[in-house]
Image (cartoon, rainbow, N blue to C red; front, side):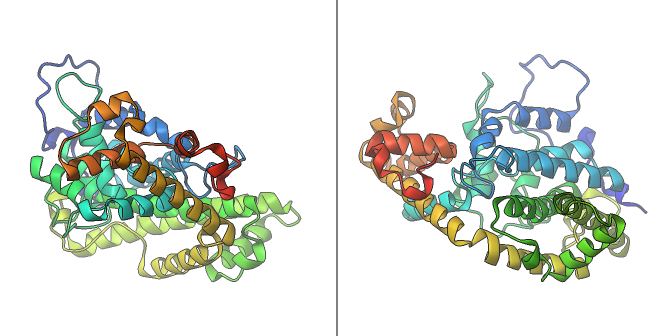
Length: 390
């Protein structure tokens, strides 16, 4: 029995929502490789280049944005999948696509959209990822969306576990192409989820240090970080501090990756699962950290929320972003023509659909485009001071 027995097989895919027999299919790629490539070539993926990861429209070119984060998640996820014998292409596709539904300004923008759309089902970035890929991104003449495989859509819907109460966006996709939301997802999806945690836990430390919002003394209060940094110092005595910190980030990623590989192997053996369908029916996640490292990782997250994500500078930027998205939504609701001819021409007649249409438009914006649209409507002087540099 091995983890590889539980790998998703593209030859056994449950297929796609739409028949593609009218398209000329070229080349040797399998179904999951095609999904990955469709995601990479999508407009929604390219827009991640100017969407917030930690810092809103950062001044420096060295900070992560949502696009570089997604690439780093894919690198980590693919490495774990390879070590476990899982399908690397499906894992990579899920990692690359997992944040496509994020609106401008990250979670601050999501909170503003959630509030603006509360009376009409609200907004959820994961549901919007599915909506973007299955409905809004339309490069093909025969169907809406990218027509991804069931396994890719299922993994995006359930990478954090079964969904017992889907929001309206995910519920619509599930109604058209049922994704068995009550079960767990494939191991590839579970690995994509933990790769996301590994990437932002460590790369956000790197960016926080670079920005001066975190310092090493704070980090050394975390036992997990302190132990790894002492090991780095012992290996490279006298090395410059900045190089030691970058080595620390690499080391922590390695520690976490190795833990996930060992814990997943142990979980699969204990559960005695021998196929992807048995993984879905296992009743608990099988891919992830060991219990010990999971506890350390939760503590690290608490530290990061307290010291980086809720840092006063970050809170000020989030409040400014929330104001921009909220006021943009109100302006478009009052006069949909402000969205431009293309979007206003497709405005639905019914109120709920109209609200969701406006939500789609704003969710697709990059940070900079949202600020530019805000300035065009309200004037550049109305841009909140925390974002006036953009």
